[in-house]
Length: 105
Image (tube, rainbow, N blue to C red; front, top):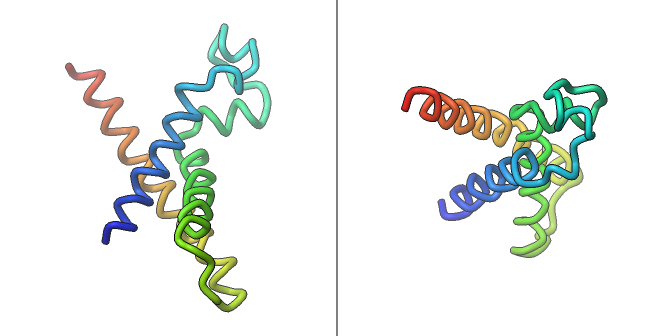
């Protein structure tokens, strides 16, 4: 259960950090106008997309931190992908709730 909470907080923390705290990742045009021109700007401005990539990254971080248990090849491939989809949904819901709270307060 604690690994689930750790995964949720790590994946959202990575997503929030990449999207909001690293302005150097965006192009100068996106920072000035807010319009995404290339793939990186579109990825960083989409919470669902960024959440997916932060999810598989968080899964690999937790997997490396707690050791590499012997698993079949399909578990090593589909486990991080499933974590990516779970993180995409989690990050999107949390980000939508935060944006709604910021807009209604």
